[in-house]
Amino acid sequence: MNAPAEIMRAELANAVRIRKSEPVRDGVILVNGADLNPEPVRWLWRDWLALGKLHILAGAPGQGKTTIAMAFAATVTSGGRWPDGSSCKPGNVLVWSGEDDPADTLLPRLIAAGADRSRVYFVSGSRVNGELDSFDPARDMATLQAEAARIGNVRLIIVDPVVSAVTGDSHKNTETRRALQPLVDLAASMNAALVGITHFAKGGQGSDPTQRVVGSIAFTAVARVVLVAAKVKSEEGEDRRVLARSKSNIGPDEGGYEYRIEQSEPLPDIHASYVTWGASVEGTARELLSDPNEDDDGKASALDTATDFLVHVLGDNVVPSKSVYSEAKEAGISKRTLERASEKLNVKKRPGEGGKWYWSLPNSRLDCVARTETVAEKPHQH
Image 1: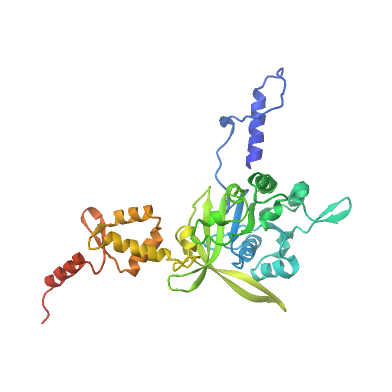
Image 2: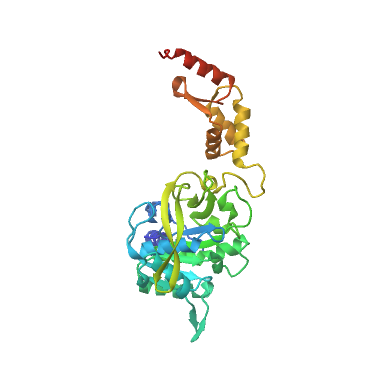
């Protein structure tokens, strides 16, 4: 049961307690906690796409955000498997796109991804007083909900771009929240996962990806889960693409999957891109999507900063790793970047008393003493 229905049930239960002689008054409705039943979050893709909730899929142009969304749709319509290998029950999908043509762009991508296109429905417009008009969420949401109910089993709704739902200023918090609410209500009433696609603002590499989403902060505030897609350099200097969780109010808020954008010809003379999923990756979205070598301004990279930090902190000493991590955090250096810097410097990591670990530089005076003692302990070779 979705939240609005649950509140309605609780309100009716509360009404039973009201004496018949007591008049029903207009005003604020209060629901007693005892009339509500705790419910778990229901997932389309566990920990990634929740039924009845809004998700934002963001990234810079050219990162395949729409292609990723079509991959989601293909998984739902075909009853396929998610990147983690879990299965998905088949269902129907609604797609409202203000940027890509369904016939020559979206449908080819769906076919290339293995979708059952008979389960995909594109919002192409609305009929008002017998005349065709563009879809207006402020006016046509009730009609869309009725059509979705007629179709039945709608499990995923894709809005590309999500800013299309905002008729006012998408940089104003109040207007954006008001505009998004009908979409959120639609997803809740249909028990469908809602995915809104948007872009990153220019610059800001290395910052929290959630804060880089264009427009009002309301987009990411209203969303329960924010997914980000980006192309980054691996530690080996190779390009790789990563889909990561940047925010989640209802589950894990880190980790991701590598992916590639492939090209195919699913039908004669029909060319389309599709996604192939790779290995899972660990870390926060900020860590996963930051270039390990340099930032936008070409200044000292995060890795260089962490390297200098370790040289300063360790010096000729042997330092408890817990202290190193703590000081790095205060200096704004992520755990992942710190560990990359330690590998770059070949930092020696040794266990000590009480199961504690200690770090030292390989060329430090104490390290040289330790290596000398180790050699002295070895038997002579004859």
